[in-house]
Length: 580
Image 1: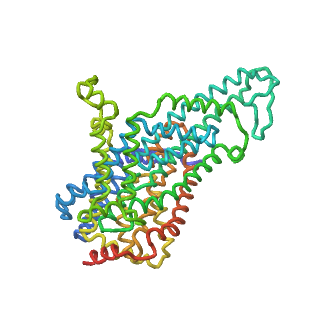
Image 2: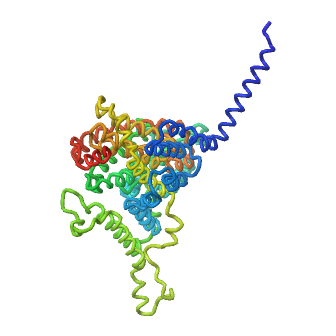
């Protein structure tokens, strides 16, 4: 006879464990908020120095960012009060880091992107690209991906994704309506219609009765699948496109800000785009093929079956949407010209292969923030409508002398993501603290043991680890912590710092597996209704291929562009500074 007296004890123990787990899950943020600084303080008890105190701050901020115990921008402000209190940097030195030239360039880029959104120029670009690419499913997918990737090079990835999703919904709604109409007209009689064509191109005949439940279910499943494919393609394209320019995403700017602090380096807009744009194209093409194969199947991806009537309906929807925008207004033309001018200013400031325009100012260092704020000043000075000045001159104006400008300050006040700006500034503050406190030298000493490993192995391990970390935490926060460490690791093993830092920076944007990885992923996940396992399965292959492509590119094209096989002079100066 079993001893039943043991059961209540086991049940009581099981209930206690469940209550403990529930308590921890409900109060995890509070536990980390209090526990992280207390546990990390043990470092300062045994080894109290400026470097250890800076390490304490880095660890605490990393945990706060990872678990979001307080909003990310609030954690990003910790250096402002903690670095002076810990004796690492004084308040003036810390706050200057939040207004560095690269941070100002980022702020100007955000303001400039809002002008594109305000006049709907980005929507016009997207619709025109879709009309050019074609209206079949496979060409629609790449038609969504290309403008998304291009716009994400200069605009917020989230804003670009949010713009594309309603267009996808409109196209699929019209397509479903068209297919339902075809079913009614078809009546499932003896004559086949253009829609009654299987994957091999053979006509399918039916009866006069209503659609069988299985076929109706099949159609609904097909539309859900196409919807998921298109939406996930947009999210992936936004993440990949953000890597294409230095202004595309936060990690790129943190890299630029850290490297610019060491003088004239190989990193600039032109060299970055020369490396990152070809890599982005390769990743976009693979994403286009892979998402079709995963969601639609291999046969349908490479099938030549066409649905002319459906294609014409889609094209009509796109054309109607584009025509509703009317002809290109003077407002849009002005924004397009000024936006293009900004890109040209950035690329040709110091391209390397020719003398850049910065040589016109030999006595001063004119950075990338100067042209963007010059363009913004023009946007706030010039009228949105070319006819406004003439109307005022002839007395025909109905605006009481108030002329609408190309840009709007209330729009900037309400739409600029100030939190992201603060997050980037904290990256520069932490980097400066690591350098000044001597933590960089401490890291260099510990990392010297990595010399025994092959450089390609180190690059692969670091880029893969960062890609995994950024799946669960902010990519900007990840770059903020990782890049200063990798800079000092490179100095310790005497390799070009960009050899480690560029792959790490790009890996921060290769976040395809989880909805929490990026706002674009989250937006698509909530809108499309896809299952978590579908995003994980599709994303893990994307991660693997993008990381593989990145490691191939950095060891081929990257070596050529950045001279990665040589230890640069600016890094040598960093070595001497660290030792001193």
